[in-house]
Length: 80
Image (cartoon, rainbow, N blue to C red; front, top):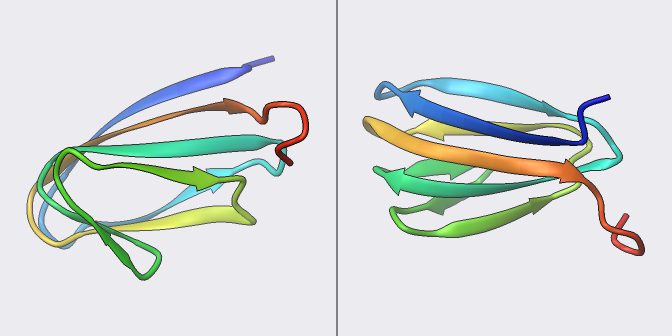
């Protein structure tokens, strides 16, 4: 069973994707370069955003070329 994940994203301008998230997992997003819209929130370069435990998926959209990483894993006890 995979207990943690690390996804390196390189997105073209206008890219729009839904990242699936299991209910017992949490994700963070670190934007290395560019800007991403997470659901309705703009996240800029050098920002670490806690995405928490999503309900099914998290939608990401690149305003321009962007690079980001998504580290995540099993929710810590008491955090679900």
